[in-house]
Image 1 (cartoon, rainbow, N blue to C red):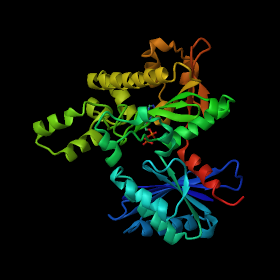
Image 2: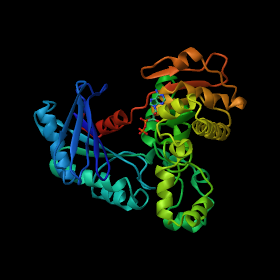
Image 3: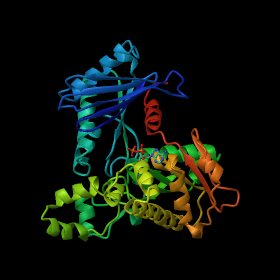
Image 4: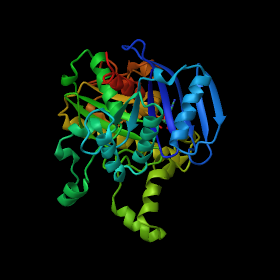
Length: 398
Ligand code: ADP
């Protein structure tokens, strides 16, 4: 089995894959250990049954031990040695990492070095790695980075117009995120379209709570909407996306707050939530808009427009030569209205949606453009955990 881990400073999300059929790993259970260092709770979803146990989790090592104990209680494993590898989702690998790596002291030092670029994410990942190293010392530990796929972005697309020294000395540049999802979708599309990945150009819209767009050129990331941090680009559930940077100074003076609390507002109280004053959850915003809430209606209009604006920019950067536009993640996969509205705002691309397929539920993927559309449009389910699991398999003996 392979365990996939996404850890924060007070939580560890996990998903266990059975790899008996290595060509087709199957998810066995998933869950979360949360409130680590506060009190502690473990929630597990196994065989369509949910279990929830309260127990003291004073640190990440305690949490890892408690998770494994639950696996045994549920009879998912008899023995820890059945877990052959652990794949960690790591948010930031900086400029040094462009592919999954087996974790060693050097990789841990790189993750630690990038804490300053991802202070909310990398420390939790490091704590989880160290906990698993102690508790499951025989397993292979593999790190998969959200930034890695974007290391192919050319400098003219990743550089900001700030002093060059900021880039050279402080590493201020676009890194991009959601790379594990983009890599999964690119590989999936190569199969769906029966094309060599090297010849594939795509515009992928990953629209979840966090949201970004990626232009894939010749199978590699060419540009993406998130930046130094995941705050830039599209309007998200609670994040503002692109804004004039001077707003920070202006509002600091108006509210008499420092830059840190303002950045927190831009991360946690902006986006769909901030604009609609209803919710960060797309379903709530849609339902408020349907009930004639004008702020919710306006938030949605801005949300669709921003996506369309990025698509047109990337369509231009790909010189109009791309194989498909893909919608993925919670909103991208499940909300027919977002797909219609975004495409309506792209008259230059002459997109035509097949309404029946757009509304139809899908398993894996569905083409939603009609035969008269200038470009193909798909909705495709992303599966970041499976992508990490497949990456881990490469590090295990055949
Ligand atoms: P995360 O970034 O946390 O992984 P997800 O990819 O799960 O997020 O996406 C969560 C978003 O997807 C929420 O805004 C949720 O409202 C939205 N969503 C999920 N299902 C639907 C649906 N059927 N219609 C519209 N939005 C949906």
